[in-house]
Image (cartoon, rainbow, N blue to C red; front, side, top):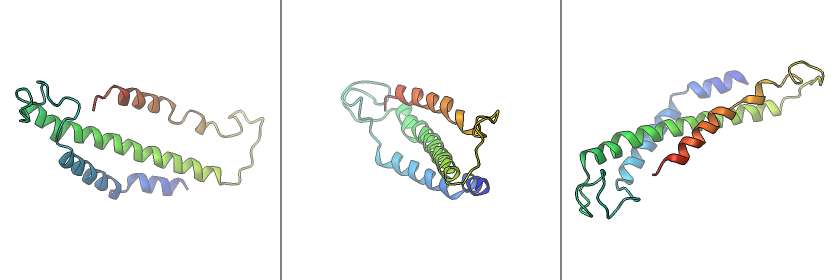
Length: 127
């Protein structure tokens, strides 16, 4: 069970598919939807539609890199959920008086802190 999850985690194919998805999203969504019609660092002039060098960097490098990291983290979160689901299907012999909370302490903390960090970061993103 652990080996299968580690094999999925170390597999190259999901990361290649994530890179393809990120590049596809960078090609399809070229415009900044939130700041159209006003002068900002994404465009040159008001309503011209011409993207500034900073806007090009944002669209072609920063946003795809962030999306790749976000999608990769979501993939690993899915693997963690899959692992926990598989553990829940195992016929365990639990001892309530065990000092490790019936032997299930490994699943108690899990992704609590990393999930809170990503939720906080995701809530601050304007795009």
